[in-house]
Image (cartoon, rainbow, N blue to C red; front, side, top):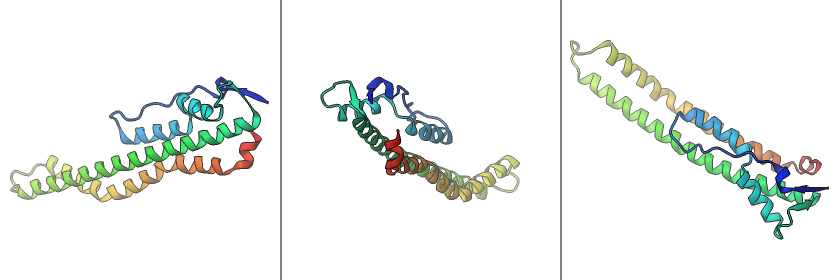
Length: 162
C-alpha cells in the first residue's frame, strides 16, 4: 500500500493566542491539538520521507503516524502549559480585585455604601472562593488532549490496523 503526502489531510490548526474568553480558547485549543495542521503533517512526513519521494510504503506511513502523534503531543503539552499559566494569572487578578473591592467597601461609611458596591464585592468574594476550584477544573480540561494523544500513541495495535 502506497500513500501520498497529500492524502494524509490538510486541516490547519487555528491560532488561539489572541485575546478572548479563556474557556472558548481552551475548547478551541483541545479541538485543534487533536486535528493535525498541514505544517505538522509535512514535518512528520518529511522526517520519514527523507528522500522526498512523495509516496511511502505502509510501514513508513505507520512511522509518519507515530511521528505525527509525537509532534501533536508536544504541541498539546506546550498549549497546556500556556493555558495553565493564563488561568493562574486570571485567578491572581481576580483575587487582587476582590481584596481591593473589599478594602473599598470597608473604608466606606454606611451612608456612602451602595447596593451596587455590595453586590460587586459579594461577587468578587464568591469568585475568589471558587477560583481555585475553577483553576483545577481548567487544568484538568487542558490535559485532555495530552491524555488522548498519549493513549493513541501507546495503542500500537490500533495504529498498525490503519
